[in-house]
Image 1 (cartoon, rainbow, N blue to C red):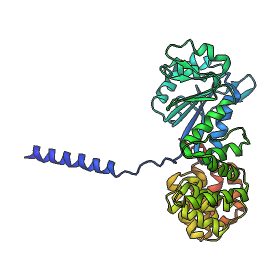
Image 2: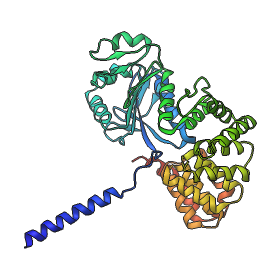
Image 3: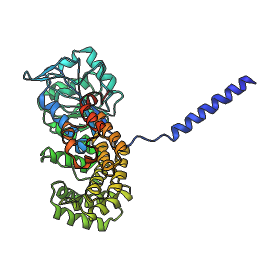
Image 4: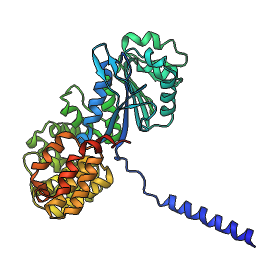
Amino acid sequence: MRHIDAIAKLLALLVAAGVATAHAEPRSPYARRNVAIVVYDDVEILDFAGPTEVFTAAGDFSAFRVYTVGPSHKPILSQGILKVIPDYSIEDAPAPDILVLPGGNAGTLIKNKAAMAWVSKVAKKDELSMSVCSGAFILADLGLLVGLTATTHWGALPGLRNYPKVKTQAEVRFVDNGRIITTAGVSAGIDGALHVVQRLLGDDAAWKTARYMQYDYWEPAESGTLGKQSKEALKALTFRDAEKATKLLSAEAAASPKDGRVVSRLGRAQLLKEPSPQGVATLEKAVALGQRDPLTLNTLANAQLATGNVPASEATFEQLVATRGAPNDEYGLACALARQGKSDAALAALEQAVKLGLAPRVLAGAPDDEDLASLRGNPRFAQILSGASSGQASALR
């Protein structure tokens, strides 16, 4: 009898576990991802600096957690002139969602058995791995390019052809094989990283990132979701031509009134010159249509705050925190809460923003931020800001 009871209890636990799993909240596609940039002696500067800039700037500096990983904690020397102290070593690096393998003298890393074992382990579990230039040889040496088409620096293509079962492609900026992306030489790492941003976050976020970097060579290709007219309208929005963007997007929204992406673009165009009730209303409509990407939510939350609808701004920032959970999202929530005199909740949000690694430039302006004026004089406010450095250091651990 006791044996039967034990089995019944076990079955009940298994069923409960299954139900819990079935009802678990799925991970948001916009949740922040870890990006590990591998560095080693003789790594090419732009090979790692280009993708670092892209992933750092993406999503208004909020989409990714970017950090460097070295074979050890010792400084590495890039191209004989630039010393870089890795944020982590292969022994203590957080698990990355995206792994970036720059080139240069890739043989330096390939000869390091421990480093190659770490790359192999990570590449089998991450969301995607991207090589830049001769970083493709790291993937090839591990057998991760077998049966795939790959590219590298034009001068290194003959060497890559020596690997069996690896098909090479010249005269392209990158090759996307799904979980493995290889790029051509040096500056092509920027294109590859922007492609990853586009793939994960969409055309709007990628083009906005490229524009911030003034990498105006890059633009998204026309596709099933970005036709010729839509691309022209998005370009006007990206380059802040308010009148043209509003005109083109108004026509597009009139033709497709239930397309949340188009309605979001129209709302953002209406807000280019200044915060306006019209732009806020348009973005609220986009959210109601299901367009809840961070770019839409962040623009809406800040516009609501600027136009005085603070409770609505708080609700939108809360939604943004749930969708992405970046330091800037928590900081915005703190501002909305402080504006309403909700000091304890505002301080909690600010503290979380600091723990997540709020940018130094934002921290520097926090004491004078009028949205946080109600917190001045509060000892905890000063304590949170003064403890920012230690909080940032542990943000990824």
